[in-house]
Image (cartoon, rainbow, N blue to C red):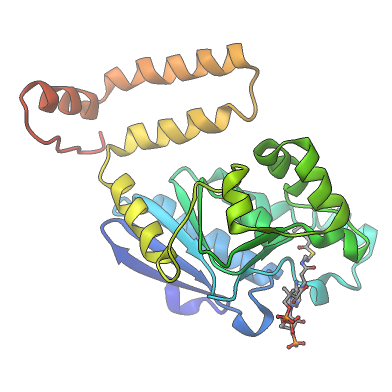
Length: 260
Ligand code: HXC
């Protein structure tokens, strides 16, 4: 029940898209434990809902998220962080099977940048600002920043960001491949929903397989990744959507996928 959430807003954006808005505006959407638990619940619910084909996560105009909640972390001790697997539950977002699009305006710093990078596609407003400023707090990125940023940007720029704490602009992020594109001011959420709606119209078995295959490229050596891709490709010939998709092409009509 969406009304039960305190730190996020969840709504149906139409055309098979669920919109999740991080909603701690006074703290620039700093990510506390409760917010992440809610985000996990909301994304898991969307993942299970057959009427949903894609998820959009956004924040406010000023901040996608300014990082993990520093005030909440401030007095943590090692034993507590370790025993409680602090931040362990953050990675659940990356296990969601449906595509997630981050619509980033303003600050995406620290855990906020990491959250955006856990999404499948990042679209950014011109004022978006990405960075991993943890070094200024005496720590380092803890939810994938050192790994996903490096995969996206390469070693040199990632090192500069992680070691100096400097941020990069939306244009820089686009130029270096961190995001797919910068969207005109004021349009980023609408555009993300459009992309989500486009995806939601495809056969959902193929969409899930495509996401799985692309993600495998981050984990598997090339030969294994190619084998994995080919098996998934072959498996899709067992679906009705493949018969429908190829049949519709041959018959010069529009495909009507049933997600089977
Ligand atoms: C807790 C935060 C916060 C954060 C902002 N706020 N970021 N609270 N945790 N990460 C709060 C401020 O304390 C302030 O609350 C309010 O939001 C508005 O912020 P201001 O600083 O007044 O705004 P502004 O001057 O515009 O500066 C914006 C900013 C700055 C540059 C983004 O807030 C900032 O540097 N924030 C911290 C960024 C950061 O270090 N992120 C990494 C966090 S560590 P009050 O009550 O004073 O109004 C991290 C670790 C990840 O993410 C590890 C794995 C997840």
